[in-house]
Amino acid sequence: MPFPFILPTTSAFSFSSSFSSESHPSLPLNASTYRGVVRDALKKHKRLPPSSQVSNLNTVISSVNGYIPYLLAVDDGLSNKGLAIVTQKTTPAIEWRPTLSGEVVPGRFSHVLTARSALQPLYSTSSEFLGAQERTNAVTAATKCLLEAASVYDYLAGRIEHATATPPCPDVAPGTARALCSLALAEATLLAVLKDDPYPAIVAQGRNKNDKEWMFKAPEIPKVRAHLYARLCLAASEHAAKASSLCSTAGSGSHKINSALLKYLEDLRRTCRARACRFFGIDAEIGGQVADGIGWVRAGLSELGVEIKDNNKKGLSFSRLKKDFTEKREDRRVDKESAWGSDAGKMEEIRVLEMLDAKWNKVNDTMNTQAIPPINTLLSKMPSGREIHTLKPYEVPSLDRDILEAMRAPPEDDDTYVDDLSSDDDVKGGPSAPVGAFPGTVDDYSRSPSTPGNAYY
Image (tube, rainbow, N blue to C red):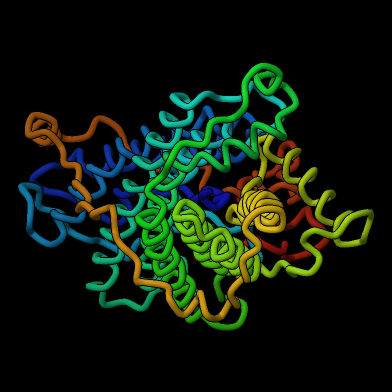
């Protein structure tokens, strides 16, 4: 499932203070107005509790989509590519809070968060269990959002690669944008498999407290194109490995990519390979080779770091208690719609593999009694991955000609801001401006001259 990203916040900025347009005098003012809408939407989104942020994502996306055409119109005017002629008066000073590097919780764009909100009902154990059609609709909606995010990241990487200035932090480096594009493609590829994968739904149905279908109907396991799905999972693993490599080399020291995101990328790579092993095992079991299927399942567990000897262990143990505690904590995160899914689906895949291992071992011990091949022998037979999604170029939005012509009129007002603070007052646990304090003097009232996590670029 997609990574639990956090949206950044930004400072106020007046385009008229740094840019002017003789052909379209109202363009800087309109750009400042729509940027103010984005800034306000991000600040309000940050103040909301996690359960309310999901429904607010469309507002954030709408505000960003409204601002981008004006921003690109200013950019085209500076490079003499559009109808507007824009001149730079001074170097703009704009601050954005970095969310991929440093000590801040990682995160970035809203398309990935929208995909998470669509998938959340699939993992909840306290709400009503979704049927096959509802699950398909949720996966389809999430896949669309992830592919849109991949297109945005690819477009940003192309823009940054042609920039002459050095990126101020890894968040806006071209390698990071390429990594996030690969991450979105890996997650979208996994969702293409999840749409027709019955086993996670069966395991989730068994853990759902409100499910009563087991009383009168056994879960159906339809035949799947196991070998094809295995190759799709391997392609997702390759995308995740590429993203992990790019993020690992981005930045240095305190400006390195957040360790939580790096761990997620590694877990995602392992989960993809484990899922590929599972489908190779299903393909072998369908062909009557139950022992090979058990070997593939154990290879998948090995990829996830699960010790095979403890897999069927009975009774209580520290590892089993730790696993149960981790699962319950993750279930609470899903129900509260907080930072769930940070393990990249690792626990979910372990449950499915353990279910198949117990089932096929029982069959092999009582009926077939075949020798289980070594794990390394099976892993050496893995084929290459197969792509399913084609990355479409990002459709750059532009202003309508009528709107652009209307901005030839002189502006009726200026865009000078009195409140030029960023989002310091929105930092959870950070200092807030006292009542009656002048703007920009919040640090004079705090005990410490610096607050951790308030760095900007």
